[in-house]
Amino acid sequence: MASGRDAKRRAKPKLAVWKFASCDGCQLSLLDCEDELLALAEVITIANFAEASSRVLPGPYDLSLVEGSITTPHDAERIATVRASSRFLVTIGACATAGGIQALRNFGDVNEFAAYVYARPEYLKTLATSTAIAAHVKVDYELHGCPINKHQLLEVIQAFLHGHHPQLPAHSVCVECKLAGNVCVMVAHGTPCLGPVTHAGCGALCPSYNRGCYGCYGPKETPNVPALGRHFLGPLGQKPQTLVRALRTYNTGAEAFLDASRRFQPLAAAASSDPELPGPSGDREAGK
Image (tube, rainbow, N blue to C red):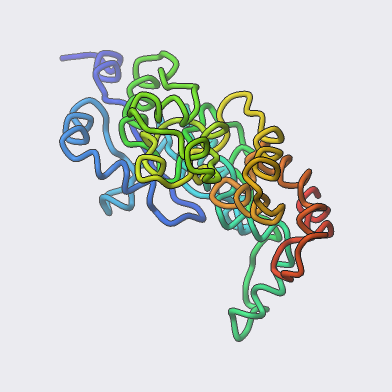
């Protein structure tokens, strides 16, 4: 009879997937792996993944993938429980790594927003801000994207299962454009594009169709966002409010994008009569 120690050695690692404030798109990226997911299931136990199965196995878990941001007091408590039951915790997607597009609430009054939407907003229990998972618990790795790249996700899972660091590109979307043979939309057409400061992963999807990059994968390593901002306002002739809005989308709370948007915010506020554009008071609230 095999010993308990031998049985434990043969046991497959347990994977859990958790949802917080998000659209489920990054979880769907995992399901979209299809054939690869079947192969993955042979070497790991998918113990907790509500998007895929109602079966839930108890923790602790060897690897937890967390999608979504923290927007409620309950979620702030729940993420601490997830962390405590996870050997490794990896955040996936813009919501989990940067607060998501819902982090736009950080520049305004969430109570005012709720009053517009809900007949009885007093029943809501929500936080004033939407924040990344790393603002609440220790995170072992962040996988960026909106949604994430499924091939990068598989690399991350395999890396943690085999005890090595994920081998993912650190370059910008511009490199992907060159590899695809694309003409630079910013140089050739004067199209505003966040490609020079955005992390690779999408395969330069938007520039391949003559559209500027929207920054879905968040800031690349050591991005010079202020320099790109000055290029937007100078040679490209864009309005300051257009620049601020470009930086405040899916990765609103990413440090490099957030800092640059705050830097250009006074110019945008002075040039705009749009009451929906967050002003300096919103920035002060977001910095709390």
